[in-house]
Image (cartoon, rainbow, N blue to C red; front, side):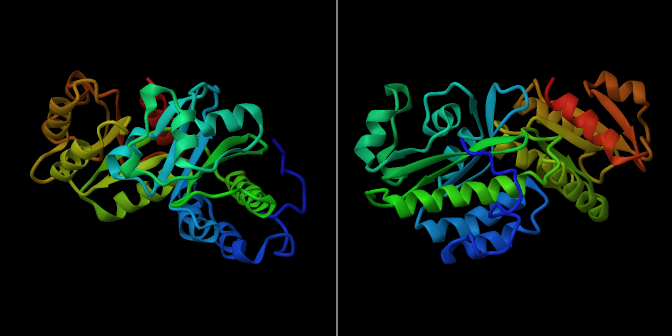
Length: 304
């Protein structure tokens, strides 16, 4: 697996080394400062440039035990959510490509079906045909990209070169991202739009995936749809309608193991001790002393 961390790579210099079709991707990745911005550029510009129909961005966790996919685009939502995490030793093309440092290219659906073990049989009506998995590495960024194509495809030298350039471009952009929350998905509920927007930006900047909810009822609806991927809830205590404690109770009706951090500038009728007794891990005062403390608490809570 090539390390593209030296100067002059496709993500750092001009466009001379980037094929014409991939220059919009390079331009979009230049200002990217979050994992999700990298993923969005990959989907918006990388998919059409490669003539692919599905894109998976997978990043290896710090301890090397699992891959986390901040974006899986092109599959139905239930399939995409199922791919959000998978073990580093999983018998899937991206994991093999990263382990062995080489692309895994499957030209037909028949080759794909033969590649996967029986327990991972492909739902033929929900996927494309050919598949390419490409490893990437840049400094501490280790992961891979997966692309599925709508038709059988012979991967010639040109296609292979384009795939490697896409991987280099994404790795270069990800090298600029603060990754403290990588692999953690947070459900944030607050009725103050400005604070919700600030937390959304700050958490994404540090690598978290964020589900925003403008109140308790919205948080319960979002968790009902995404319970398999949400790791921790950050809930305001005082919200109109369903307040933080009632929201936590509703979340735990869906998943009794749901982890929660409360935040509040005024806990109203609740003491901090009562909030902790409800099962919250921490109660963070607002205004926050600093976002780094919020990042640390959420990361530790999400990872148990």
